[in-house]
Every structure is written in structure tokens, then in C-alpha cells.
Length: 91
Image (tube, rainbow, N blue to C red; front, side):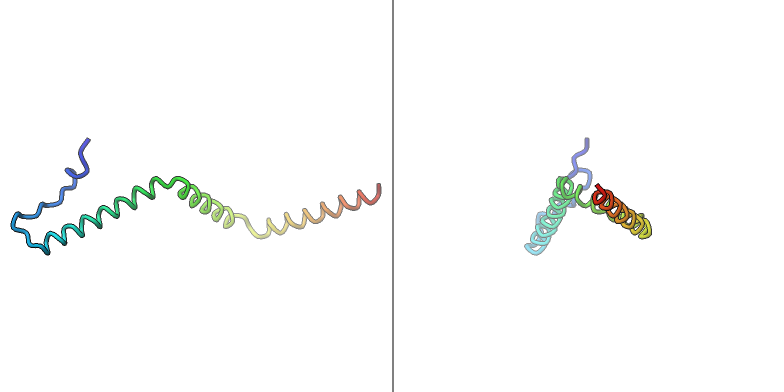
């Protein structure tokens, strides 16, 4: 298994590199390290990924259920409640 550092090597600074080159290299290394940490953190956040996935699924279902079906369901529920109350009053 290849080492990540050896599979994507960055050129080494020459021995006579200036302070500005060294500082620039350090800044670039910090930036790359920060990106790597963020990527690993996102992969490790199982709860966050599950919540995002659930929200996406809910949004998909909301888009796929027509408004007419929701209204029809609500009307049937009201009719059912009315019928149940009428039966209870007769007893």
C-alpha cells in the first residue's frame, strides 16, 4: 500500500531557499493539513451525515407527495372523526 506522502510528493525546497519561500511552503502545508483534517472530520461525523441524509429523504418525499393526496387524507380524517362522534352520541 503506497504512502500518501510518497504517492503525491511535493518538491522539496532547495537548501538555499529564502525565508519567504520557507514561510510560503509552511503556509501551504498548513492549508493542506487543514483541508485534510476537515475532510476526515466530515467522514467521521456519522450523526451529521445521517441527519443530512434524513433531511434529504424527507424533502424528496415532500416533493413527491401531491398536495391533493394530503388534502384528501385530511378530509377523510375529518369525516372519520365526525362519524365516530355521531356513534358515541347515539349510545
